[in-house]
Structures are given as C-alpha cells and as structure tokens.
Length: 77
Image (cartoon, rainbow, N blue to C red; front, side, top):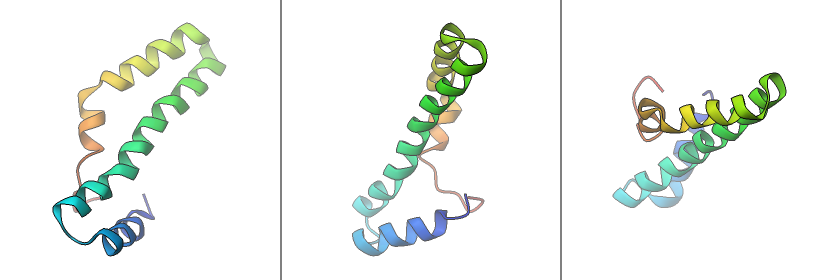
C-alpha cells in the first residue's frame, strides 16, 4: 500500500510511539481488511450470485492468515 508510511506516521504523530499508539495504528488496517470482505461479497454477488458471495465472504472471514496479517507491521509493508 503506497500510503501506508504516511498513514502510520500521521497516526503515531498524534498518538505517540506508545503501546496505545501502536494499537491505534492497527485500527485503520483492521477496518480496511473488514471492508474488503464486503467488497468481495459485492463482486462475487455480481458474478456468481448471492449464495456464492456468502460462501466466498465466509471463507475470507475465517481464513486465519488473512486476519492475522491485518495486525502485523513488517518492514516489507
């Protein structure tokens, strides 16, 4: 994500580089990950119908690496 360093620096400038600041820095990425489940639902619903959209959203929501990676800050990102 190209704007991630700017977003993180803005959040940490406001909250400080503390435990609470790092927690608040995770919130936008968790919200974007959650929103992507709904976006997947909308796309699959247009292509394959409601039943397939429900199934695809469920799979994405319970896929463990997907929601674990939303909480990590790595040097690659």
